[in-house]
Image 1: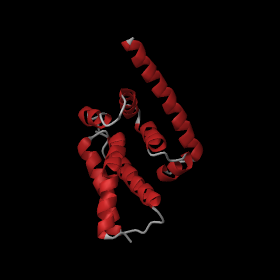
Image 2: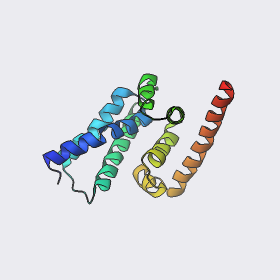
Image 3: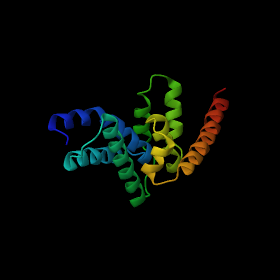
Image 4: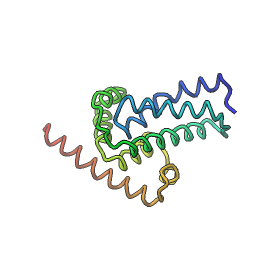
Length: 162
């Protein structure tokens, strides 16, 4: 069970990560905040026990991703909040990282989600498959297709600038 002090620490340490994960999926600042807050609320209200910090982080990410995907399915009106995405992109150390982040954010939801979990959260294809209720091969196929789309997008951007 999570103590009140632990809850505060966990919420503070994971707040930005959960928001960014939800932003990748929803591409809306306000809705991403809602999804992240829902995950923190569930942690507080359900008070689950965890084997490790990593287990807790994975649980929070799973709840955030699932909440964001449900929000997306409920309301397909979502359009990218360019301002929120630009703000999130500023947090990277190098301009190339920001460029890749923005390119990923423009991908279709099914590709954005697997890329975000695989590269930004460093989850395995099997872990992602479990979270998204997919097969591992479906995850690896989506990752492969996403890489191809990103490659085309980033190369096109290079050609447009050079």
